[in-house]
Image (cartoon, rainbow, N blue to C red; front, side, top):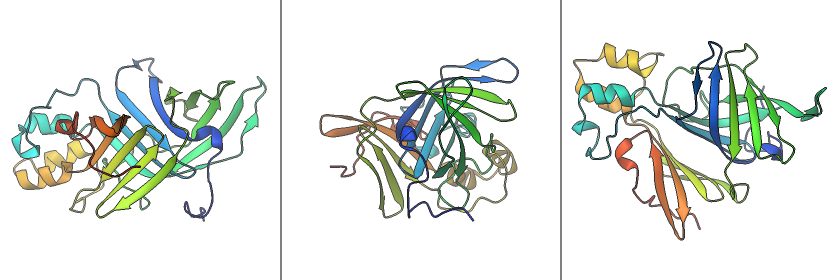
Length: 242
């Protein structure tokens, strides 16, 4: 049985902080270096937020009810999750790189924007000499990702639960997480679920009403810079993170 994420650290200190993805290369050779992807890691709990760069600009919408069906479909392609990370010991490989294997536990341990994970396998991690650049490889060869540590995010680290939401913090970056209020009707990607309920607008909106918002601190304010709900961008995160 996996250890409880609340009893002790389950990742090495090298993994602490907020990481921003620089690029991902897939097995077919295609590269994505423009999507907005953040991974915030505390000593155990984690949250990641993945927003495609080509998602339409919906900042002027008043909410899900104000979107067309095509715009709702575009929102449905985001991918975010929370839970905890379990990482093996850091070792030196033959080339002298520090490496470790990480697994993510989200089903039953956190919130999942997508009911089905696009990449469920472990990650083979390696770090640069100064620990600010991290490369993640899928054992199957499905992808290679490069991550860069966001400066000023190794401390303080915290997870705060307030009512129906949680706030994950790493230094000057925070992620607000709120789950949808309805159960997912079946285990499938959101785009498929929207097809299932294309004539049931209330269910579609309820399925997409799941928020992962990244906020960055400027002075005393925390301003949302990207979110699964596009109209949240630019809003001030109204939580006490002092």
